[in-house]
Amino acid sequence: MTSNGERIFPPAFLRRCIRVQLQPPSKAKLAAVVRSKLAVPPHKMTDVDRLIESFLAKSETELLATDQLLNAVHLLLQEIDADGLEALLQPLAPS
Image: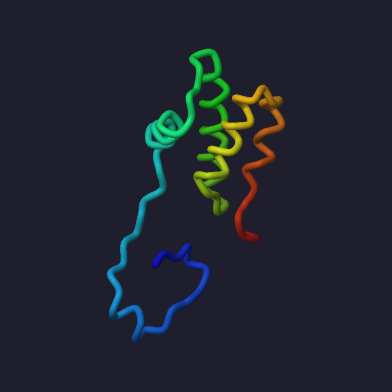
């Protein structure tokens, strides 16, 4: 079972669980995830790096998911305008 912290579980249930807190991914980790999932040509790496940096900056104050970054990179590789792709990096929940 996983939770994004969106609900509070009863104490009796939580006593029977092992809690694991995952740290937010670093720029290097996100770049590795992108490379492992998508074939990024070298001439697109500058735009991909810019999306990763934008993702990390927004992640400091908003709840984002790595799949949002992957979707933005996928569209970038489909020759969609790179400047408009940052609009995909919207918070998952209202802040």
